[in-house]
Length: 316
Length: 316
Image (cartoon, rainbow over all chains, first blue to last red; front, side, top):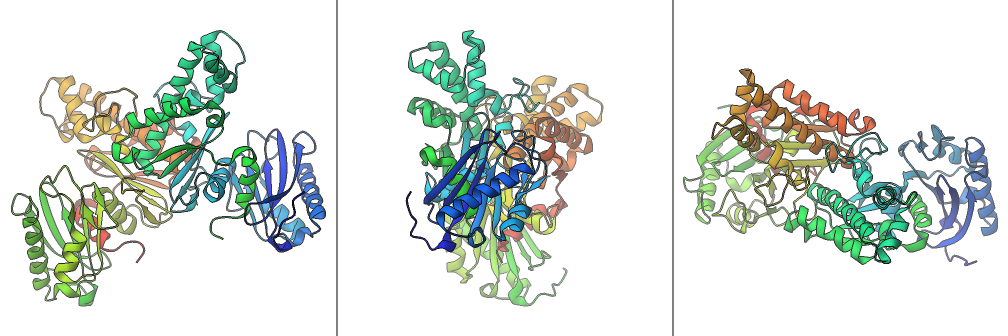
């Protein structure tokens, strides 16, 4: 286990809460991860208040191994699915965690450990913070980080600050409309970006086109690598639609950089080039040329660093 | 002529530069207009450097009537069509002013009058500043002001500050794509919001549908008032497309308020309701319910106040 050079009070805890697994990460303010515990969400984390007790014990266990008291932690940052209220540190009613409703994690951890700095952000915002601080967005004032996995969402940093919007719902561009009255989206609307270009949608559309049930986005990209032309057409259409979504984002925000996560990490350069070409064709030249569209710079530990970045808001 | 109660050094000058006319407005820091000169752009203002001399004489004339020297002006703010560089105070190559190319108004007015604070913004940004300060956006941290006249553009205020983007091109949502491969836009792209929903586009589309050449947006709204059903259909479609554009803006920025200028001032409440209904149908409930979509609050003097607002950036 690596030992940090930071003073004990410099430790932060990041908590990554997902529908499948939860992780507690200890790190220092330079983004160095020094300890990590993971647990399946079904294992004592599926419903509140049990989940709180489980998380608290995980935090205590990490602190014990670091030989510090939880009370001297610098901060705790939580990354989880929305909707949530970052002002009060409350998880509202996340679809991926049906057993957690109106859970104030800020109140819980402040009460339990007396830690004053407890922050919470949705996972796209959390990853945008991490990319800005340690990844593909270093030194960049205006950027969007796009998750393109099961769903599509963005974390938006403007003027060097996370932009959350009125109700922590900024960046929900997966549900911007790309094709009016287009295919039905899981959200109930039609023609949303997510229904056309997410990993899950690529799998679903390819399943229909190829007559192979249950394909995932990764499956489809693997089929493309084997030379399957139908799969390649599905991917190209998805890249085109993602490109329009990014083009519209750029016409709105004239960003320096768009960082694409999830899909982009295994889709390869050809897919990214197709996305870039669609952006070029659907934006102004002056806007397109001012922007870089690049894959995530954080690699495998992305979610850990995302949670840790929440513990260290830019304002620090 | 009303006389301001502000001290002489509290005077600001706003300059509104348009393709048809230019105005020089004197006001105080409370947004009270105390003096105004206007001149047709063809009259000594169509080409630089003549236009600089003409503007300077207009400023001198206003100052003379106010019995102050231009050198003690608090600031000068210029509102004009883009593209421009707000950092250097330079007009680049505006399509509505072909005789002005790479004109540094900041350098010109600083040199001519020794005024240190010379600012320049595009007209949508300038109007957003004025709405935020004195109009329909008072007290609102996150808003967009949409011009919907000849073209469509937005000025975006986030966290109480004007958001300009990397190259002063934020807010160019008139050229977000609403219908992929849709009708050709004047910008060369296809399916842009502006090609579907601007006043000019409403006129052009109605001219085709009704077989009446040369209709303007205002003409079409007047036809609707007389009960013309074809005209009403054209307007409803345009309202639907504008609604999608606003819906996508809201999914991206989760704004408190969207203020609609130009069209909305003469289109009436039915049109605005059609726009709102399209926004409702194409956004998340939680995002829609957090937002007000309202007409401009500034009335006839909007452009004057926009120029004056540029002279008084929010940062003051």
